[in-house]
Image (cartoon, rainbow, N blue to C red; front, side):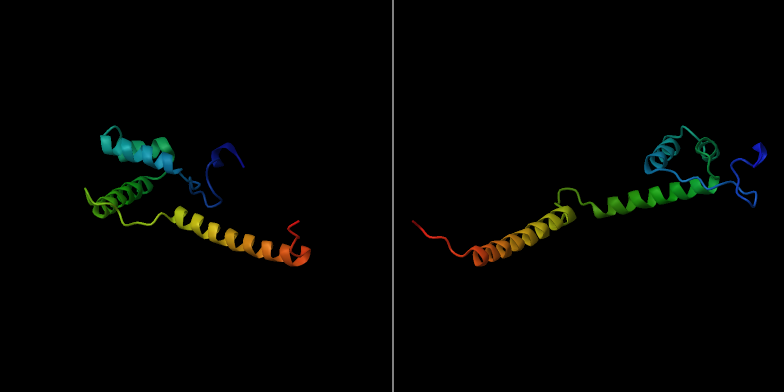
Length: 114
């Protein structure tokens, strides 16, 4: 592959560049603050302008959805998925411990209380 073909695929199109969430956020902030234009942001990040436009649309919709969900002064009724998972793991381990203690007692027999 020659120097002129670097950064393109076999069809001659520009290779896809995947942006990290942090890169997307930085681009969005730059656009929001008016520090860069869409063209400048696309050139700096090495993506197409349509990618930056889509990023801007998705970020705006995500922010609107999050704001629509929030109610000032009202606690969220959401259940923490990590807490649910932790409680399920505790229950599973408790049952396993009970089962192992019963098996141990059956194998070794009940000890004398001398």
